[in-house]
Image (cartoon, rainbow, N blue to C red):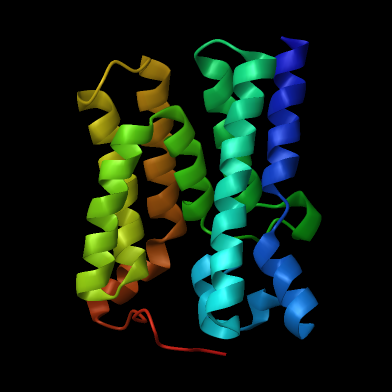
Length: 199
């Protein structure tokens, strides 16, 4: 029990490392949260700093999720250990203790978490999300589609523990809560499309 708690805490602290904020400080000496959408994530980094930093943030945020789940598998164990560590990493990304609890929306870290827990369902959901983004150029819409499809596919594809399904449902809820302003903009037709630079 103590080991599990410590592992979850470490996963949260790992998730709290905001690569968007760090890379923006390193590359341009700015706080990314004061530019563009104000979000400390890969999409806003792409808009404000360009493709290189944006891709780097995306991959590093995915890596955080992967590392947290692997830590959960080997240190905490069981069905719930990896799940709790993955959720902690996403929570850390969204509310980072190192950066005043103001972080990103957690999609890239979610990709890392769900891909490590259930690769095939995540892959299929990811392909659908990428197609949606390519067609509409709305990253937020693709992110929401991804978050919605992952629990559905985990439930229907393969034989995964129920804890994984519950985790995916919590992640889906978190994604919709974090994207609530984007949902309003999508409905109003005011959401920014991929390729539009802000800041």
